[in-house]
Length: 205
Length: 190
Image (cartoon, rainbow over all chains, first blue to last red; front, side, top):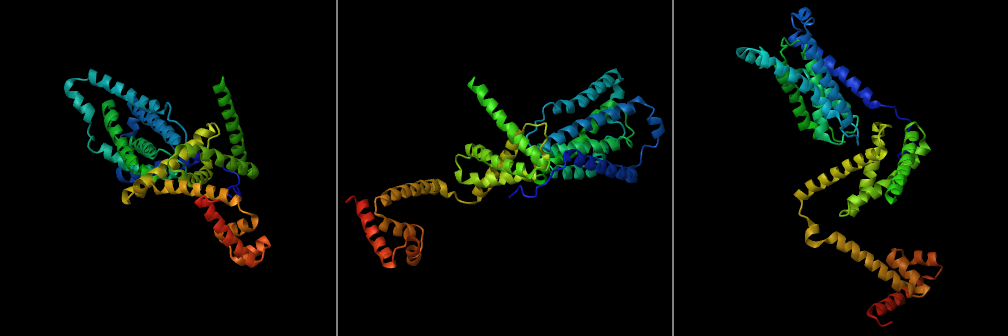
């Protein structure tokens, strides 16, 4: 009989599992960044710029919203409810800021604001840095019970992407909102797509 | 009004089941035992409604869902409606089953479509059992018992004799005469 010797169950294992996964994922990304890329050389100057903190706030709030999405999708019977709105809010905010910056800029400056100097490496470096968090978050989900596997995989990828981006922002020299609003987002969408593709296979139970 | 009564009854059931689960999660084994028993009845009804065309799969799926709920019981959040959680797991297992079947049916020729074997045979067997039981009731006991034990349950002459307290030859005679009488009844002579 199933009930025999079932014993007490630890309360709220989801929070603990995700805490472990995020700590591991962030640590892995930080190590990768330190070894392969290194923090930006003008770090001491950058922390005094407001745009550095705006960028960080954008990524952090996006990470928080994707954590909520992943947590909800890890449990049977929970609806996403307002979480898509919470994901959209930081994106809309950075886009508004980007639009304001682009409108005010001189025409030749606009391309510079959008492409920066690192547009062709940024999304791929973000995807690379999100790999440790991707493995860790998928592990966390496997110990829970997602029922919508493709969506859960995508949420895991999005969360991993956000963690990777958070670490990447300490290396990345770009600060222009148009750049952040496009290339950072694109970088986060790479692991999201991978998660949606692999979710049904990795998360079955 | 009727609707309100129905929802309040459902709520009462939900509250009771939820209490049992929460006590079970805290380590109360007897409560968890009761929870699983009531849950299996609930799941059976839930899945039977959704598997009308595959009645033979219901019981397997009930067991599978029950096991899944047991294995995933740590994912229940006390703030969440219990039925939503249970139904999400049962539906996940249901979709899983249907997907597996669809994959299998792509690889095999569907026997059911051509012969409708499963349902027809099921129905016919049930009909035959009912008819036979009716006819057997009309036989005297010394013929009916030997037929039931030997022909339906598959016991030997010696076992039947021991069970009924009849002699072995009386058992054999009973079977012989009983079958003759049944045949006559079926032909419509009696």
